[in-house]
Amino acid sequence: MATARSETGYFAQTEINWDKLDKTKFYVVGAGIFTGLTVGLYPISVVKTRMQVTTKDSLEKSAYAVIRGLLKTEGVPGLYRGFGTVITGAIPARVIFMTALETTKVTAFKIVEPFKLSEPTKAAIANGIAGMTASLCSQGVFVPIDVISQRLMVQGYSGHASYNGGLDVTRKILKQDGIRGLYRGFGLSVMTYSPSSAVWWASYGSSQRAVWSLLGHGNDDKGSVPSQGTIVLVQGAGGIFAGAAASLITTPLDTIKTRLQVMGHEKRPSTREVIKTLIAEDGWKGFYKGIGPRFFSMSAWGTSMILAYEYLKRICAQDL
Image 1 (cartoon, rainbow, N blue to C red):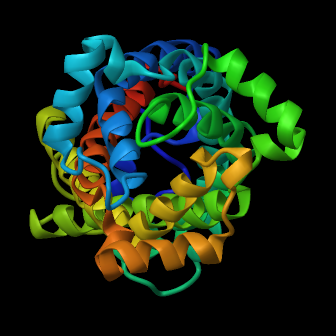
Image 2 (tube, helix red, strand yellow):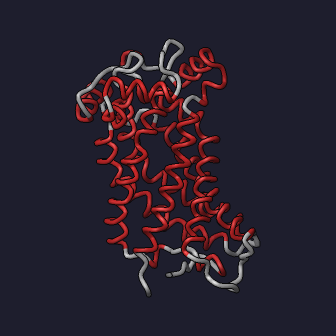
Image 3 (cartoon, rainbow, N blue to C red):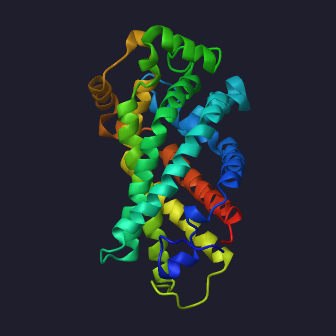
């Protein structure tokens, strides 16, 4: 297994760095793997989004009620509203994200290396910086896709407009608001996803090292390299912890952002009005609407994504 130059000691034996990857294979195989994951986990995003736009008059307020309503009226296709739009935009967005993540992580580790910090702390700082940078770089592609797909997810639901696909949504947004309409909630998206990405990757990196330390593996090179099964279990545990931490911290901003992005032109509220409405209808717990599906989504997606991502890096590693 290839080792990472930005890592030192034992941890270099369990992680693969950017300079060791076959980039072409990494991008091509990665596109296929992450498309498959999106197919499996996409319905959770639809349910979460619908729950976040419910009002006090909505009949479907629980995840179960939303799923039952979708299946009753539209069948399984209802759980994949906006899927085509997401897949179309996800490939370039992920290419940008993964490239920025890996290259920034290398630099960040080099920056923190001189400081006398514990391995979990170094990993939290370097991974957090890399996660935030990657998110910032990919938002230009991700936000328009998010706006379009979320409108398709909630169309005809709780008073929201109906559309004839992603192109129809795009045409109507451009007609009403111009290009700015596709970047509605951009500031909140940056405020939501960048900290979320930073928290996720920081939690993932630090929790991995904490687990390895608990298993008796320190900073030196002594001891045998763990089995692939052990590495996968530790990475999976890190993904669950990271998803839980990120969802708890960023759900309030995600709820506000979602409401801003799905509202039509004729009833467009300000951020302050969205906040006031949430508090008036449900109190402070309104900011955590959809926390169940979001928690499950981020944990399930995070764990699946990181296991697939680390597997992708292993099969794309070059023996230099």
